[in-house]
Image (cartoon, rainbow, N blue to C red; front, side, top):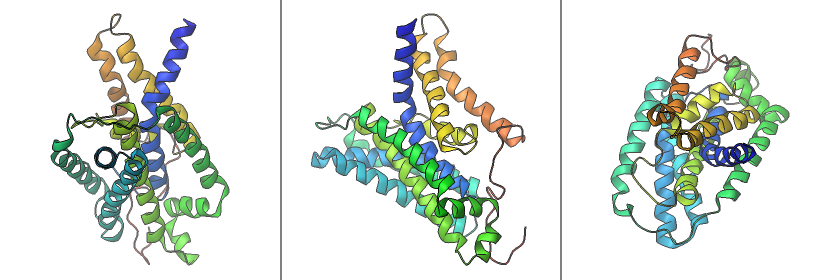
Length: 286
């Protein structure tokens, strides 16, 4: 029994690391007032960029940087539509997911089945994710930048009145979220399963979106939520002999649907930023 608990914890952390990385990025974006449902697409682009660069150069750290850049660029394009052009954030995010998945699948065909000689340490990236959660919690709760970011998501008019550009704050938060999603994708293709395959993200981006809600937009609670989702993934394989495999594999996604449904009904975890999902226009009063 003790061995099962310990093994489940270790594997839950491994399964949960990409969810945690992408979820932390989504928490920052949503704290600024912007919902980005394009996490899945950004993760796929990050995973491809990481593998393609690492496989071509033999430098996995360069691949990691490429993944961060790919996620950030994709998020910047989303920000143009959602922040500058005030497009519907949910529609723009879904479009980014479809674009990212399609583009990654198309451009990744030459890399399918290719070996990756040099990989990144899974343990190192797991530790990095935990350190980032702690650092981002400190930034959000104990720094001036964190106060400005939270204010942009709660009451952007106040931020504007302080002489701070709300659009710049939201751009920065969204691009950072994209960089974190790209980093999550790199974990998959450089460490967890060092290879490239179409569909490598397997819906983890959607779980990351649900994680932000489940964790009440709190970076440290996101660690617990990521472990929970990671444990569900691990148990879906570990308990196949005792429970119907199809049901176990569906458990993480069923929980995502439950969390998102409760959130839509206003019965999910509390703490959502007041201006979440609302485009901002200077001089406009809500």
